[in-house]
Length: 187
Image (tube, rainbow, N blue to C red; front, side):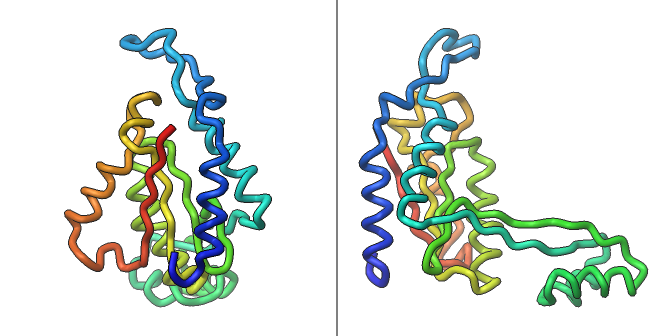
């Protein structure tokens, strides 16, 4: 908002142009709400993707190799992926390919749009944003979540802004150790 106001404006434009009612396409199959129409996370993600892509935001991935040996991981964690694999193999370990992916990156800013289950938010905040920050790909991570008002009109188990704000504050200042902006949206 301060250092890159143009990016903040792009995000606000994209969010404000999404027609929430047009995203209310998911028919519930849950017992308690059978037949009711909910906001579709797939449809909302699709519209966010279309909007942010028009402004040049793109997915980003970072690949790496892991193994079961913690000492070996510590030794190879800061190496390039090819070097990680080679050193794991040279030490007699079994290299396992892995990667982190973030929805949108532009100008050292990452955006994760999270309309999925609540457990994915912790992964975004404590793994994805952190990995890209520590890897010097981003300076700030932005997590977009539904406000409770929107979440109540979605399938069960979806995280919501107010709850995740509480979870972050409960951790204390400096945790996670990556600058974050938590954004809540409502219809």
